[in-house]
Length: 58
Image (tube, rainbow, N blue to C red; front, side, top):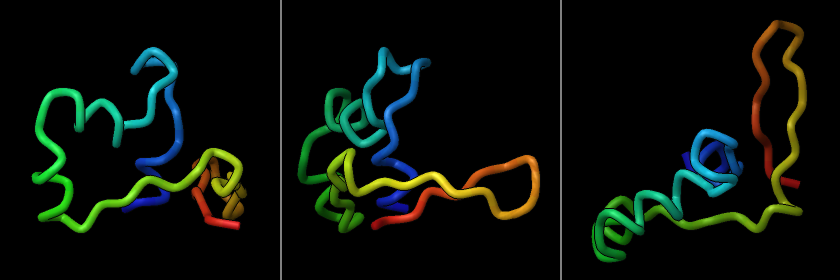
């Protein structure tokens, strides 16, 4: 889950879902899920042969 949530989205004002969640909830909630952000240069989109994409870490 860390990989997909570290990809910035236009819907979220070019923020990562991780950042948005942290804004509305506290950091300790993310710590309970053991969620950690991945740096933008570590997120790679790669097609899995279908219309959807997977987010992989470099």
